[in-house]
Length: 100
Image 1 (tube, helix red, strand yellow):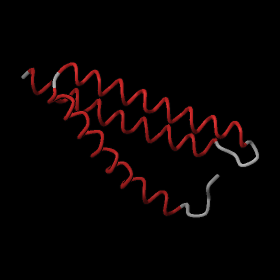
Image 2 (tube, helix red, strand yellow; image 1 turned 90 degrees about the vertical axis):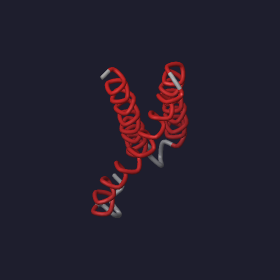
Image 3 (cartoon, helix red, strand yellow; image 1 turned 135 degrees about the vertical axis):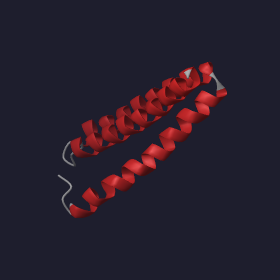
Image 4 (cartoon, one colour; image 1 turned 120 degrees about the horizontal axis):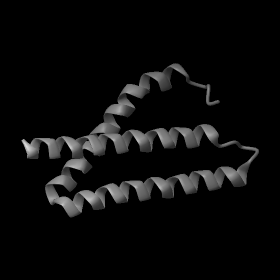
């Protein structure tokens, strides 16, 4: 029972991290502006660094727990990213040409 709850926790953490990372990437893209080049660059680079820190913290925490937890988080993160992007693809295609 405890192993099932633990696995569910790590799967949820990986999927949640994937969602947060993709949403923050989407927000960064929506917030950049060609006329504000300097602040746009800072936003993109700073956002990327923040996302990498978040992913690193999650993976390190899972790694301290166990290798199985690390692999579970990583697998659920990668699978969730693909599934979320697949679901969002229809929205992206329906808004072709409308960036802002």
